[in-house]
Image (cartoon, rainbow over all chains, first blue to last red):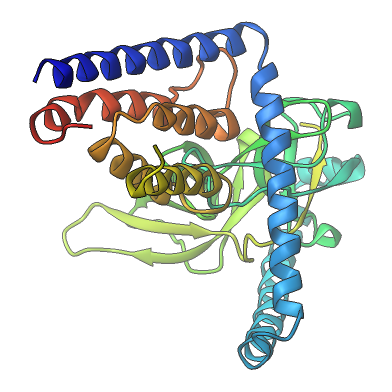
Length: 261
Length: 88
């Protein structure tokens, strides 16, 4: 009995020490400008690269050949669909942008940036963040915009660089969970609430003319496109309508384009 | 002495660390919950810290480190339960 109580106290003391240690590490990292984070992120990027490469090798070995063939066909069809959806949305964006002098001027000084590889999972972060394989050594700065889609048509802003290390940067998605973001749909200002996974929701006045496929822009990212309307819901008696905003392509893109704000 | 309990604990801890990189956050949270239920698992705190180091945006406490806080809450919140029902 006494021995058991001694063991319990010892265990609790150990746990208390571990708790204090974790807090100290966290504070030390914050004070040092995130050096431990940089180390952890570099390790995670390597893990991700090794994991995805091992996964590809297992699938390419033919072990799951029948299933693999179907998945490949499915993927090709989805990519084709995605491409078409992106082009339709992008064409719409071009039309609207051409009507606006401000955006014409913006086009004239069209963004110069760099392409970066996504080096982490897009769904693992509880904060709506992901890692890209370019950092301060490549000229990336906090606040830079991260774009994806079809660069030929301007693409969509999918996030903003939050912090940079030498070769890796952390990006926060535009539609990060519970993140509020101002946007404009058909000249109507709305406040989008991110839901993660490239989706967001907004409330718009009931009589606003918003329909599926309309492009969504945001003044917070220099008036660039951030998505398209994926659906509109109106309940009887409600003064507003619920607008669902999505990215018109799957967030499985491996490359993104980084531009200055 | 190495036994099944330690094997399961190590496997769960490893799963937590790997899931932080490859899986959805719920998997990590479930692993953390399982660890906290059965053991005084200091590695649970390390998993929470690892998760926040990887994904937490902002600098110098501009965001709340949810997983580190959750780890501390789990590890100490389940302490009365462990003390009551478990001997480890």
